[in-house]
Length: 76
Image (tube, rainbow, N blue to C red):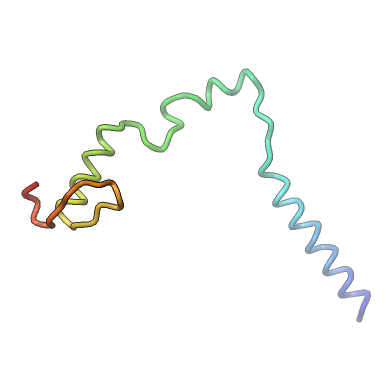
């Protein structure tokens, strides 16, 4: 019974270490240019993001802490 528990625990530790260790990657110098492209960012257009925040704030009254006033009626 103890042998089975040790084997299970060892397998679990090895699986966790494999999963956690796979997230650390060294990016080579020639690959950094690809990662710095505009298409790789979450927010492609800052103006569009601001408009989306304003629309959300004025329609729903939910700004998300951006500091914009909003009444929920869409008239701002």
